[in-house]
Each structure stands twice: as C-alpha cells, then as structure tokens.
Length: 201
View 1 (cartoon, helix red, strand yellow):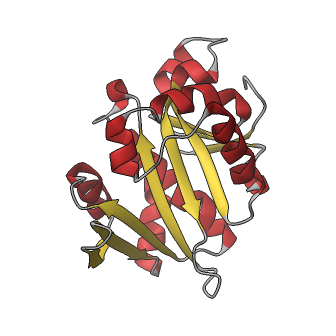
View 2 (cartoon, rainbow, N blue to C red; view 1 turned 135 degrees about the vertical axis):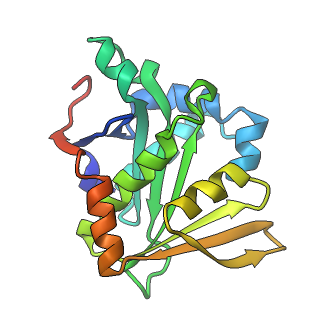
View 3 (tube, rainbow, N blue to C red; view 1 turned 180 degrees about the vertical axis):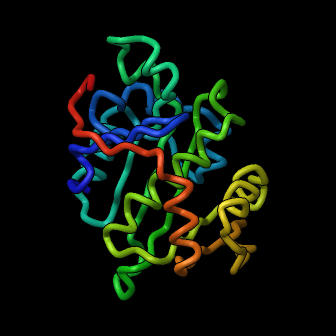
C-alpha cells in the first residue's frame, strides 16, 4: 500500500517503517525457519520471489505492511541499519471487497531475542490506530490453533474468538471498534509519533 510508504511510526518499544527492498534479505533469512513457516502458514520463497512479494505488497491497494524495528536498538545506535534492528512485521489486509471497514491483521516477531517483550502487542496497537484513519472499524486475526502466545495476545487486545476452522486448523478472533474501544485504542497509542520516513531516518 503506497499510503504508508513515507510514514514512520515511533512507539516506546517498536518503530514501524515501510517494508522496502532494504529489508528483504533479512526477512528472507527469517522465512527459512520451519517454525516461522508453520506459525505463519507460509511456503519458503526464493530471494527473487521475496523481492517480488515486497514490491507487490508496496503496490497493492489492499495490503498495508510495516517492518517492526526494535526501538531501543534503533535509537541507541545512530547510523545503525534498519536491517540490523529488524524484529518482525505487522500487516493489514482488506480481505472483504464488500466490506471496506473490515481488515485482517497479523503480526510476526521473527527475531527470537525480541519475543516476549511486548513488541507484537505494541505493533498491533500502532497498526490498528494508523488504519482507523482509513475508516476501518472491524479487525480480524486468523491464528493457528497451536499458536497460544499469539491467541492470548489478541485476546488481551479485546479480540474475541468468533470461529474455529478444523480444516485450516486456525482460530478467528474479531474486534469491533465501538466508541469505548476507540477511546481505549487512543489511550494505548497516545505516545506514538508519526514522522516522515526516509531510509536511515
């Protein structure tokens, strides 16, 4: 999605930056992991396919992707490459052409040293806050039945289980943004700064 290609979102634990070609090599290394392929229901891609995927995610109007950076590492090392600070990614897909207010959200904290620190939670909150400006009022997360940490994280973010697919072995959780939920999201993300993005910014 071109909408976020010039935007950086600065949080307490994470920084969200657009997914660029600079991030592809590290992302490609992550996705060689059997564990991540299983958790994300992904097939391994060649490096060339990964570059093509990054271009399509940037161009497609129905996808919004940010790379999640470790904010502490990113701010502590002036001149550090974004690639060296990468922790994962957070994505939003407009999956229902009949309902533009619904988005499917997913997050992956791929870097083992970055897990269990609240990076995924803050990244999801920041993404939801960012895309509510697009008129989104409903969010879904589809998570593998065995991925208990992710299911618990989304439940803490007020998502409720609405379906279980034994065929796909996944759980669907949903959050509808009522006015109290909108206020809660604003409070949770009041610290987030939106800045112009340039490589190395």
